[in-house]
Amino acid sequence: MEGLTINEAADTTGWSPRMLRYIESAGLIEPPRTPKGYRLFGPAELQRLRTLRELLAGFDCALSDVAFAKRLASDARLRAAVERWLEERAEKPAEVETGDWLTWEQQKHERLLAIEPPTPRLTETTAA
Amino acid sequence: MEGLTINEAADTTGWSPRMLRYIESAGLIEPPRTPKGYRLFGPAELQRLRTLRELLAGFDCALSDVAFAKRLASDARLRAAVERWLEERAEKPAEVETGDWLTWEQQKHERLLAIEPPTPRLTETTAA
DNA sequence: CAAACCTTGACACAATCGTGGTAAGGTTGG
DNA sequence: CCAACCTTACCACGATTGTGTCAAGGTTTG
Image (tube, rainbow over all chains, first blue to last red; front, top):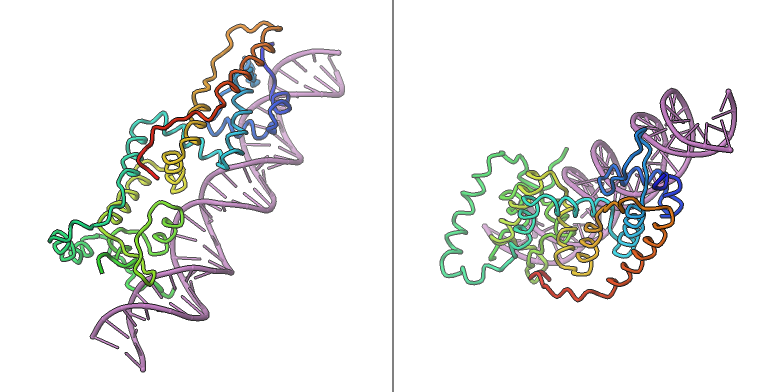
């Protein structure tokens, strides 16, 4: 047979069998199966699992982070939206002072009212 | 006072003041402060906050996901590591003969070490 | 056949995330 | 001066993540 079973894979990668299933459920690996449904971990999967370990430990990030990175890599719309948001830099309204700022300030109260939910919170410390 | 205070910003963005502080603590916004430490939300911050709302709702992702995306954008080494992991595709070693795959494993190991050097990916992504 | 695997599913539990609330204290402005 | 803001720092609480363990049942193999 070509590939390690889940317990053997656990031994060689340092993950527990439980975690191997969990990682699969998170969409980060996809080991092939035998006709009867047994997972078979080939060299590629094993390498991926070891590298994943180093990745998480070395950069102190979470499985869900890598899962999101995968989503980013495969969903162009999501990636574009996130990039757009990140590039919306927080620039100070320094040059708007010429008058745009005043206009904006004047409109601020209108905008306050424009938010449809009648925000029942007028003071932050609402007794509950 | 060139900017809204936290409660005004909360009203215009739909976030609670509590969440505005939380989002800041997550590193996703960085509103300037008055000399005495009061946060001041300018138009850019407010826009960012509204967009963030749409982003999370529209793609059903979490604040921590966006925070990680920001990390990805600003940390080239992390980005390279994650990309490398994602590209380590589950290329099936075809029909690996029983004696072959150990060598293959070893070669892969060497291959990994080969790309280990700090990949001077200097493609700065404008983020800091 | 029976032991030793594998599968999915569930219960459990610490840690963290997302969110609200409150307290103690400084700042602002009428 | 005093009410209404702001600040940080906690406590609380449901939801999710990460992880172990166990149960019920199918599979492989000595």
